[in-house]
Image (cartoon, rainbow, N blue to C red; front, side, top):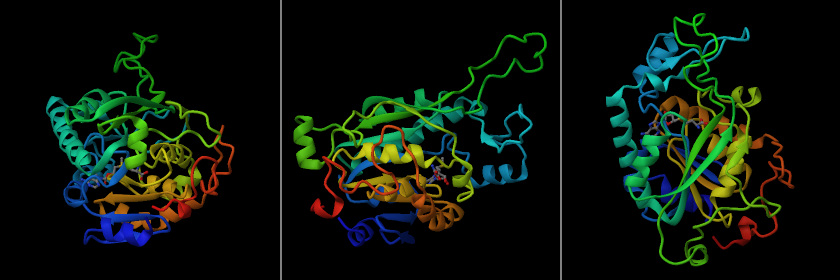
Amino acid sequence: MDIETLTRRYSLGYRHHLFETVLAVHADCFEWMEMAPEASIHAIVTDPPYGVKEYDVDQLEKREAGNGGVWRIPPSFDGHTRSPLPRFTALDEGDIDRLKEFFLKWAELALRILRPGGHVFLASNAILSQPVFAAVVEAGFEFRGEIIRLVRTLRGGNRPKNAESEFPHVCSLARGCYEPWGVFRKPFMGTVAECLRRYQTGGLGRLPDGTPFCDVIQSERTPKRERDISSHPSLKPQSLMRQLVYASLPLGKGVILDPFMGSGSTLAAAQAMGLFAVGIERMEGYFEESKSAIPALAKLEVTLEHWDLPTGAGVKGVQGRLPMELSGE
Ligand SMILES: C[S@@+](CC[C@H](N)C(=O)[O-])C[C@H]1O[C@@H](n2cnc3c(N)ncnc32)[C@H](O)[C@@H]1O
């Protein structure tokens, strides 16, 4: 694999830009996934639109105007004004049904383009993970558990509305302190070892020092220096994304896809780790922003606990994983 092959295979006639090891494409991912080469992608790492509608143009206009929709300003409890967050409890039953249909269709397309044994890491939230994960399994994926990203989300923890002083010791919903990422795998025949040999998929990468990848990650909210690079409301931190992209390719070989790329935090993480990736974004503004955000985020030095190599320096030369240029991909 090289960046020219990646571009030839995955730009599919859409507007795109490329960096050292990653390709960003301006397209609707449903359309793109219908055309992308079958069984060619090794892993999907993505943070999808969760109310599905929060990235629709009308909802983004409401967010801009500070006026209703699914975007709400979280309560200011420490004197700081917060940025609007999508409020998923505002979804009704019809919205949940549409959400299930959306993820069922999406997962069917994902199943087609993934290699057997390929993993999907799907960002979610505590409220919606149940119907969404069920839809992904219905499409034909194996459910392989969840990665729990420990992070204060600012959701929940409120006293009952309009009765705060009557029930001072009650909260209507637990304060969100984690973000669940669904882990799925495309079914394959034979053993994991056979799958690794044939498709370079089937397992997860261990940490550079050989310890297993763990499903609880002590994380952080996206730091200001990263938010200063990208204005995307759902920008994920590099400290998390670099661990996820690394684990998603067990042999460090192959192509990662982020079909809901936003301004490119997954692609930036892949580039920082020396991995190949393709990102798809349908909003013109976020696609344009990714041009400057991807290289700037990829350049940041990020310290990861328990990783005995300087990240940002890439994974080249790490024991047990071949440097990309020697892998014959
Ligand atoms: C939750 S955000 C992901 C943000 C990303 N994690 C980042 O760090 O920038 C989801 C993104 O998916 C995009 N999106 C929604 N539907 C899409 C579709 N059908 N095809 C491609 N992108 C889509 C939205 O415009 C939004 O930028």
